[in-house]
Image 1 (cartoon, one colour):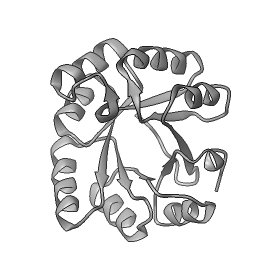
Image 2 (cartoon, one colour; image 1 turned 180 degrees about the vertical axis):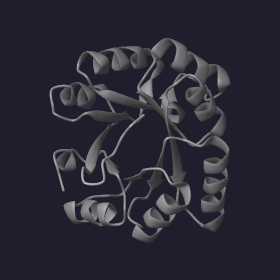
Image 3 (tube, rainbow, N blue to C red; image 1 turned 120 degrees about the vertical axis):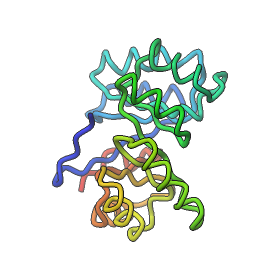
Image 4 (tube, helix red, strand yellow; image 1 turned 30 degrees about the vertical axis):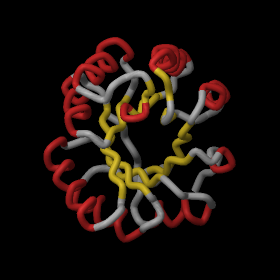
Length: 187
């Protein structure tokens, strides 16, 4: 399982294309989140990540050409074997968890109803991590971390070093960002 030390906050690069992924392979980044991808790319992505000692998290909901269902989750887990799976769907995360992959429940902080749904999914799935989007709400980072008792990744709309520091101060174990300028940031 992913371990986040209390004093070792990290920025996790989130990539939207193969070009950015390949650039990250030669960097010190230990983990990478692959957002938009295509079915034909995910095997190569996972293989290259392992070769470069990177932990790759595939966002299962955003893999083009692969329906987001139990069969797709089984395919990813058995054939691709990424380090972890990110999803908003309980059934996908349950399959990944049974197959020994690190699971990340992505929760969108839209309104009270979405937060309630997120808490129900946390209770149902018991993921290893939770990613909150947008990651700009310190009160929600604190609340979810305390209620869930698992590390929180703050993601979405984080554009500055100050916003990263606010997320860390609120208790985020990591920040995910697709902003290349923030990939090298350390608190």
